[in-house]
Image (cartoon, rainbow, N blue to C red):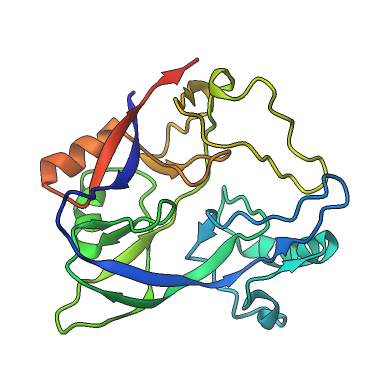
Length: 239
Protein backbone atom coordinates (compact mmCIF):
# COMPACT_ATOMS: atom_id res chain seq x y z
CA UNK A 1 0.00 0.00 0.00
CA UNK A 2 1.27 3.44 -0.94
CA UNK A 3 0.62 6.54 1.19
CA UNK A 4 0.48 10.27 0.47
CA UNK A 5 0.50 13.59 2.31
CA UNK A 6 -2.68 15.52 1.49
CA UNK A 7 -1.96 19.19 0.77
CA UNK A 8 -3.79 22.20 -0.63
CA UNK A 9 -3.56 22.53 -4.40
CA UNK A 10 -2.23 26.08 -4.60
CA UNK A 11 -2.32 26.00 -8.41
CA UNK A 12 -6.06 25.26 -8.63
CA UNK A 13 -7.10 28.89 -8.99
CA UNK A 14 -9.75 28.68 -6.28
CA UNK A 15 -10.08 31.77 -4.13
CA UNK A 16 -12.08 30.29 -1.28
CA UNK A 17 -10.86 30.88 2.26
CA UNK A 18 -12.35 29.85 5.59
CA UNK A 19 -11.42 32.01 8.58
CA UNK A 20 -12.67 29.99 11.54
CA UNK A 21 -11.75 28.24 14.76
CA UNK A 22 -13.29 25.41 16.74
CA UNK A 23 -15.90 26.34 19.32
CA UNK A 24 -14.11 24.86 22.33
CA UNK A 25 -10.64 23.76 23.32
CA UNK A 26 -8.39 22.56 26.09
CA UNK A 27 -5.91 25.09 27.45
CA UNK A 28 -2.23 24.88 26.76
CA UNK A 29 0.24 24.07 29.52
CA UNK A 30 1.93 26.92 31.34
CA UNK A 31 5.39 25.73 32.41
CA UNK A 32 5.38 21.96 32.85
CA UNK A 33 7.00 21.17 36.23
CA UNK A 34 9.17 18.48 34.59
CA UNK A 35 10.35 19.84 31.22
CA UNK A 36 9.63 23.55 31.94
CA UNK A 37 7.91 23.98 28.56
CA UNK A 38 4.89 26.19 27.89
CA UNK A 39 3.09 24.71 24.91
CA UNK A 40 -0.06 23.70 23.06
CA UNK A 41 -0.71 21.55 19.98
CA UNK A 42 -3.87 22.68 18.19
CA UNK A 43 -3.76 20.16 15.34
CA UNK A 44 -5.66 17.43 17.20
CA UNK A 45 -9.26 18.49 16.61
CA UNK A 46 -12.52 16.62 17.14
CA UNK A 47 -15.39 18.56 15.53
CA UNK A 48 -17.94 15.86 16.41
CA UNK A 49 -17.44 16.33 20.16
CA UNK A 50 -20.19 18.39 21.81
CA UNK A 51 -19.24 19.89 25.17
CA UNK A 52 -22.54 21.68 25.88
CA UNK A 53 -23.50 19.18 28.59
CA UNK A 54 -20.49 20.14 30.71
CA UNK A 55 -21.24 22.40 33.67
CA UNK A 56 -17.78 23.97 33.26
CA UNK A 57 -18.36 24.86 29.61
CA UNK A 58 -16.90 28.36 30.04
CA UNK A 59 -13.54 26.78 30.93
CA UNK A 60 -13.24 25.56 27.33
CA UNK A 61 -14.26 28.77 25.56
CA UNK A 62 -11.03 30.78 25.65
CA UNK A 63 -7.58 29.87 24.34
CA UNK A 64 -5.02 30.27 27.13
CA UNK A 65 -2.30 28.49 29.09
CA UNK A 66 -2.94 26.97 32.50
CA UNK A 67 -0.87 25.06 35.06
CA UNK A 68 -0.53 21.39 34.15
CA UNK A 69 -2.84 20.26 36.96
CA UNK A 70 -5.68 22.46 35.65
CA UNK A 71 -5.19 21.17 32.12
CA UNK A 72 -5.35 17.60 33.41
CA UNK A 73 -8.56 18.33 35.34
CA UNK A 74 -10.26 19.71 32.21
CA UNK A 75 -8.92 16.88 30.06
CA UNK A 76 -10.62 14.32 32.31
CA UNK A 77 -13.96 16.13 31.94
CA UNK A 78 -13.69 15.82 28.15
CA UNK A 79 -12.36 12.27 27.96
CA UNK A 80 -15.74 10.44 28.25
CA UNK A 81 -17.08 12.44 25.28
CA UNK A 82 -14.27 11.57 22.86
CA UNK A 83 -14.73 9.23 19.88
CA UNK A 84 -12.89 5.87 19.93
CA UNK A 85 -9.24 6.31 19.02
CA UNK A 86 -9.07 9.99 19.96
CA UNK A 87 -5.91 11.35 21.57
CA UNK A 88 -5.86 14.75 23.25
CA UNK A 89 -3.04 17.10 24.14
CA UNK A 90 -2.85 20.62 25.52
CA UNK A 91 -4.58 22.83 22.96
CA UNK A 92 -6.79 20.10 21.47
CA UNK A 93 -10.05 21.51 20.12
CA UNK A 94 -13.67 20.38 19.91
CA UNK A 95 -16.96 21.22 18.29
CA UNK A 96 -17.76 22.85 14.97
CA UNK A 97 -15.66 25.42 13.20
CA UNK A 98 -17.10 28.89 13.81
CA UNK A 99 -16.30 31.86 11.59
CA UNK A 100 -16.64 33.27 8.08
CA UNK A 101 -15.84 32.15 4.55
CA UNK A 102 -15.85 33.60 1.07
CA UNK A 103 -14.62 32.93 -2.46
CA UNK A 104 -14.75 30.05 -4.94
CA UNK A 105 -14.22 26.61 -3.43
CA UNK A 106 -13.13 23.30 -4.90
CA UNK A 107 -14.35 19.90 -3.78
CA UNK A 108 -11.78 19.94 -0.97
CA UNK A 109 -10.56 22.91 1.05
CA UNK A 110 -7.31 22.89 3.03
CA UNK A 111 -6.48 26.47 3.98
CA UNK A 112 -4.73 25.20 7.12
CA UNK A 113 -2.39 22.21 7.06
CA UNK A 114 -4.23 20.27 9.75
CA UNK A 115 -7.86 21.03 8.75
CA UNK A 116 -9.47 19.35 5.74
CA UNK A 117 -12.91 20.39 4.52
CA UNK A 118 -14.99 18.69 1.84
CA UNK A 119 -18.20 19.41 -0.04
CA UNK A 120 -21.02 17.13 1.11
CA UNK A 121 -21.58 15.72 -2.38
CA UNK A 122 -17.88 14.85 -2.72
CA UNK A 123 -17.88 13.08 0.65
CA UNK A 124 -20.93 11.05 -0.34
CA UNK A 125 -19.23 9.96 -3.56
CA UNK A 126 -16.16 8.77 -1.65
CA UNK A 127 -18.24 6.93 0.92
CA UNK A 128 -20.10 5.21 -1.92
CA UNK A 129 -16.71 4.00 -3.16
CA UNK A 130 -16.23 2.15 0.14
CA UNK A 131 -13.45 4.36 1.48
CA UNK A 132 -13.03 3.99 5.23
CA UNK A 133 -12.74 6.47 8.09
CA UNK A 134 -14.46 9.41 6.38
CA UNK A 135 -16.54 11.32 8.93
CA UNK A 136 -17.87 14.72 7.95
CA UNK A 137 -18.92 17.20 10.64
CA UNK A 138 -21.11 20.27 10.31
CA UNK A 139 -19.67 23.75 10.62
CA UNK A 140 -21.03 27.07 11.90
CA UNK A 141 -19.41 29.16 9.20
CA UNK A 142 -21.16 32.10 7.56
CA UNK A 143 -20.46 32.56 3.84
CA UNK A 144 -20.19 36.10 2.59
CA UNK A 145 -21.83 35.34 -0.76
CA UNK A 146 -25.19 34.36 -2.20
CA UNK A 147 -24.31 30.92 -3.56
CA UNK A 148 -22.30 28.98 -1.01
CA UNK A 149 -21.26 25.31 -0.90
CA UNK A 150 -22.14 22.94 1.93
CA UNK A 151 -18.75 22.23 3.44
CA UNK A 152 -18.08 19.68 6.16
CA UNK A 153 -14.98 19.25 8.28
CA UNK A 154 -13.43 15.80 8.15
CA UNK A 155 -12.66 14.41 11.60
CA UNK A 156 -9.23 12.80 11.32
CA UNK A 157 -8.01 10.45 14.02
CA UNK A 158 -4.32 10.55 14.97
CA UNK A 159 -2.84 7.16 14.03
CA UNK A 160 0.56 6.01 12.78
CA UNK A 161 4.03 7.37 13.32
CA UNK A 162 7.12 8.50 11.50
CA UNK A 163 9.85 5.86 11.20
CA UNK A 164 12.67 6.28 13.73
CA UNK A 165 15.23 6.34 10.89
CA UNK A 166 14.04 9.78 9.71
CA UNK A 167 14.02 11.37 13.16
CA UNK A 168 16.95 13.36 14.62
CA UNK A 169 19.48 11.02 16.25
CA UNK A 170 19.74 13.35 19.24
CA UNK A 171 15.96 13.57 19.70
CA UNK A 172 14.93 13.66 23.34
CA UNK A 173 12.17 11.29 24.53
CA UNK A 174 8.73 12.79 25.22
CA UNK A 175 8.28 14.45 28.59
CA UNK A 176 7.04 11.86 31.08
CA UNK A 177 4.87 14.47 32.82
CA UNK A 178 3.14 16.50 30.10
CA UNK A 179 3.83 14.36 27.03
CA UNK A 180 5.51 17.08 24.97
CA UNK A 181 7.52 15.67 22.07
CA UNK A 182 9.22 18.69 20.59
CA UNK A 183 10.80 17.67 17.29
CA UNK A 184 10.31 19.27 13.87
CA UNK A 185 9.10 17.62 10.69
CA UNK A 186 12.08 15.85 9.06
CA UNK A 187 13.18 17.06 5.62
CA UNK A 188 12.59 13.57 4.24
CA UNK A 189 9.82 11.97 6.32
CA UNK A 190 9.28 8.21 6.22
CA UNK A 191 6.27 6.37 7.65
CA UNK A 192 6.64 3.49 10.06
CA UNK A 193 4.67 0.81 8.21
CA UNK A 194 4.05 -1.24 11.35
CA UNK A 195 2.06 1.63 12.93
CA UNK A 196 -0.25 2.46 10.00
CA UNK A 197 -3.98 1.69 10.36
CA UNK A 198 -5.30 -0.91 7.89
CA UNK A 199 -8.89 0.19 8.62
CA UNK A 200 -8.51 3.88 7.63
CA UNK A 201 -7.99 5.53 4.25
CA UNK A 202 -7.57 9.03 5.69
CA UNK A 203 -5.98 10.02 9.02
CA UNK A 204 -3.41 12.27 10.65
CA UNK A 205 -0.17 11.10 12.21
CA UNK A 206 0.00 10.60 15.95
CA UNK A 207 3.47 12.11 16.37
CA UNK A 208 3.19 14.77 13.63
CA UNK A 209 -0.50 15.58 13.62
CA UNK A 210 -0.26 18.53 11.23
CA UNK A 211 0.24 15.95 8.46
CA UNK A 212 -2.91 14.56 6.85
CA UNK A 213 -2.19 11.14 5.34
CA UNK A 214 -4.20 9.11 2.83
CA UNK A 215 -3.91 5.72 1.18
CA UNK A 216 -3.54 5.20 -2.54
CA UNK A 217 -7.18 4.02 -2.51
CA UNK A 218 -8.25 7.49 -1.40
CA UNK A 219 -5.96 9.30 -3.85
CA UNK A 220 -7.05 7.09 -6.77
CA UNK A 221 -10.74 7.61 -5.97
CA UNK A 222 -10.37 11.39 -5.79
CA UNK A 223 -8.57 11.52 -9.10
CA UNK A 224 -11.01 9.14 -10.79
CA UNK A 225 -14.01 11.13 -9.53
CA UNK A 226 -12.43 14.47 -10.46
CA UNK A 227 -12.43 15.81 -6.89
CA UNK A 228 -10.14 18.82 -6.84
CA UNK A 229 -8.65 21.28 -4.36
CA UNK A 230 -5.93 19.00 -2.98
CA UNK A 231 -2.78 17.29 -4.21
CA UNK A 232 -1.09 14.09 -3.10
CA UNK A 233 2.60 14.00 -2.19
CA UNK A 234 4.07 10.48 -2.10
CA UNK A 235 5.40 9.43 1.30
CA UNK A 236 7.69 6.37 1.60
CA UNK A 237 7.16 3.68 4.23
CA UNK A 238 9.59 1.32 5.89
CA UNK A 239 9.19 -1.68 8.17
